Length: 342
Ligand SMILES: Cc1c2[nH]c(c1CCC(=O)O)Cc1[nH]c(c(CCC(=O)O)c1C)Cc1[nH]c(c(CCC(=O)O)c1C)Cc1[nH]c(c(C)c1CCC(=O)O)C2
Image (cartoon, rainbow, N blue to C red; front, side, top):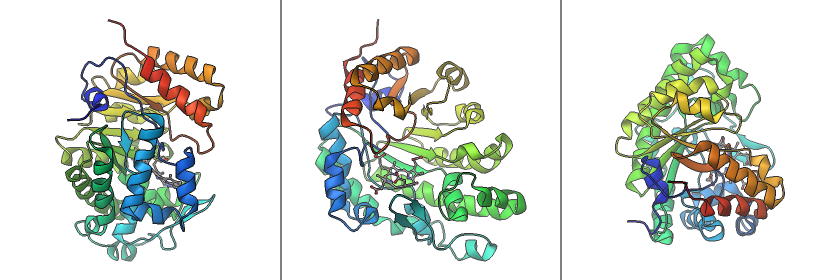
């Protein structure tokens, strides 16, 4: 079905000749083509909401880097927006929500979960346009934020070191917290199923703020809703990424997902033992790519040796925007030249 289906074969746990490779945030500021296009626009949101442009930047890393998968250019914050919480992307600051969720009235004022995915037509159009441009060269990854991470932005109103307002709500009003999480999870499940209908071959769930929750809260307020989404996506491979949450791995090992993304702090051998039977994705330190290209190649081979089979090569988090393109290419090309032993 694809000229290069290595990524999907590896994600399904099939025996492959080498690990596939792609990078989180590969469609973005590391590429001069992206920066040029981005500079001609009013901002990030124009790019996200214009299907043809989103498709163009989605395909850029496939052309420029030769990665084994594309990831649709979008953002996890389209879900809160579709639920009725508008955001702005402030240059050098990050996302800001002028209106936030603090009370039951705020939750009740949101759109019903079943209606929200209908407001994301531009994402489905971007998937359609991307599939055309890709012309079956490589598979396309769809994604969403895990419900806890989306909740964290909706309550906090933006990024935060501690997400103390979001965590406060879990203690002060667990019932309302569950109401909001359920609404996010249901909207996300419908949205992701639509993405699959528009050509997403695998879904990655980003729980970027998993690491601020204690283990019991992680199970109650995050894992439960990731599980709900995984169950809805039967037939489509899913990758789960709980960043900075070592304690979450055993629970993630019980989910019906196929792939587990590791951050760069993770101990690969321990992770393997905790999520037996799953494919691992990751986990090079993004800062490693600042080193000279020979060092990058050496570190990449060491990482591949450590993971062995059942691995999709990636970084431990998104590639930093000022990473030299040479470092990125050394990483990708080293993986592509690697071969597993017999
Ligand atoms: C937490 C989160 C967000 N968005 C996302 C996450 C989860 C992954 C993670 O933990 O990083 C996910 C995301 N955001 C973006 C993608 C595109 C696909 C890809 O990986 O290439 C993906 C998968 C584009 C983007 N999303 C954003 C950019 C940069 C915007 C720009 O070009 O001006 C891109 C390319 C903006 C964004 N979006 C978000 C923040 C905090 C920021 C600001 C920080 C920054 O500037 O990098 C929210």
